[in-house]
Image (cartoon, rainbow, N blue to C red; front, side):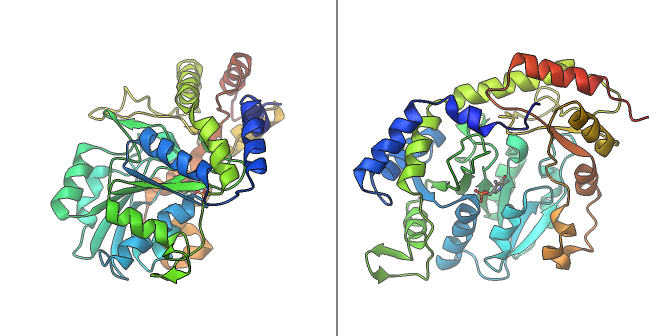
Length: 373
Ligand SMILES: *Cc1c(COP(=O)(O)O)cnc(C)c1O
């Protein structure tokens, strides 16, 4: 049986360092707002290439706090619009609507599954205040056109870097490309904690101060509250675990790239569409850290059953688009055919830094032997 993601085996590969870190935190007697979090924030800011990092409770909080901070600063007002890809995980959109801002959906490019930068400008109105760029599946979605649009229209560029930690655009890391970025360390992400955890990076000093206060009850001095904040902190245990795992992240991502190349080179089945390799996507400098290896098939459900029968676990990212969710009934009338096609056809194959050569060659053989009839 090939698991989609074997978290136990991934974390075992970091021993004994993880256990040592956990013991260190246990014995320190300090479990929140201590030195592990401080050190992780410095190390992570360095890694991303941002001036500031604020550890928070999860990736959704990271994103919603960024918009909340912009509201507190008067940069945005309730009812303002935020451009967001229609093909994303629901957290990207929750972070917008939670703050009474309005998401404006843009269709993805069918080659990248990320936002189609050519479609953004026509969606900009005098209420547009930001673009929320999502580097979905681990593929950078930043390009020169987006940079120029953000600059030209004076928009905030916010990145949802949950799936692309370690990814690059030119010589910079995603998460340092815009004004602020949200990161998720959910256990299954490329940099995964032992529970929920997240971070915000920014190089804007004022924004970083508001964010740190908002995440800690709206307080920067104990029992003195400047904002109606929330409690969203990165605890010491998670920070200690993340410090260990961050050191191996680039190597782990390189292994993911090798596996993706192997899949792309060897999967050959006319009923399966492979992700375009970064060399094939013309005009862009796309780096991919393959959080997910996403194929498409018009026969997805049969293919998924066939893989499952042969002991290969797969997942769908994601089965229902946001504008088709009951929670977002107000967007049910939107016409987003590319987003819908993607949701109907995508299937994620197993990929992780510890999956073996034998396992990936077995996955290739099974995918290649699939026929829908
Ligand atoms: C995982 C994820 C999030 C949310 O992160 P959590 O830590 O689960 O709250 C946000 N955006 C995207 C694209 C994600 O994949």
